[in-house]
Image 1: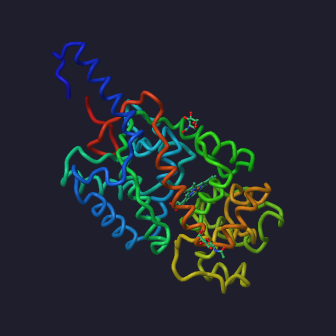
Image 2: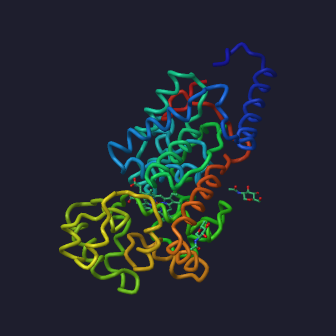
Image 3: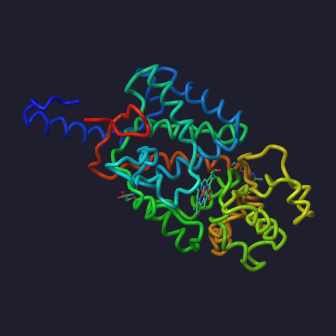
Length: 344
Ligand code: HEM
Ligand SMILES: *[C@@H]1O[C@H](CO)[C@@H](O)[C@H](O)[C@H]1NC(C)=O
Ligand SMILES: *[C@@H]1O[C@H](CO)[C@@H](O)[C@H](O)[C@H]1NC(C)=O
């Protein structure tokens, strides 16, 4: 981008400006950030997310997970989107903790449409946030909704080791979960609120293996049998996170008493996670762990009782998540392609 003849002082100034932009980008997130520079940007994102969700509601779940896995690692900077290259073969998306992460193709489609409309203007980091907002709204029939501030920049650093260090594991104890969220300035209540996202989507059996031998106080034996049967069907199959999305045949075979609770709309984002959790019918150890600490348990009960409250608090928690900043002094840019940093 810069000619090699640029004097050192000018180059240094350029770097300083980039740094300032990166810092300012996160200090000044604004609703309607692209109003002047790319009118209609939010409609374009919504159109593409709606199309993807119509074709496959699971892609909506993937987008809801993506904002978490982006923002908890180096802030919301689209570092999770970077593909491995010879120069950086171990980007975040190659980390084991990111198993099953998806939605990248939807982000690429949105980015292509926005580059055609207003080149070099909309960051991939903002697209991740807008897309998660629209996905959660669509999956909840509009019950989860919020205005999404924007003006983020895309980061240039993406390391599997950072993802591995910053993202919580499904085997975590409640103490580890609380500590993990605390490091990002999230409370126990917000841990409980955000975990409710597991009302939608799927998980690999490798992420819940220990649950197949957990005692009845931790998981209903009939549900455990159901999971065990499904997990025996291949090397590492996926199962719905929400038992209410299970296929009726499997439920009829292992857990017939639950048949009447299956839902018609799959991947519906509501507070059913909390009901399932209190009944000990959730997939991950980290979900069950929320019942083992007084404050967290209180919030699980609170959100089981009031679905409207969860819709509102989940919306607020996603906004807070979307404001996690890049590390100080990070370089930021507007990527041309979400999977690769720009060439300089
Ligand atoms: C509290 C700690 C959390 C842990 C330990 C955790 C763990 C996991 C695991 C292991 C999976 C399945 C991955 C796989 O095996 O393919 C998963 C899926 C998912 N998680 Fe979490 N998660 C946590 C919090 C969150 C948060 C905060 C959100 C979003 C706000 C979220 C949204 C999702 C979604 C939507 C899926 C399904 C994705 C899909 O179907 O593509 N999770 N999570
Ligand atoms: C958490 O809050 C502290 C104190 O305000 C701040 O210094 C720190 O940068 C915040 N951490 C994150 C990840 O935002
Ligand atoms: C549920 O939460 C909503 C939103 O905060 C509140 O307006 C409503 O009064 C609550 N309902 C009950 C039964 O507590």
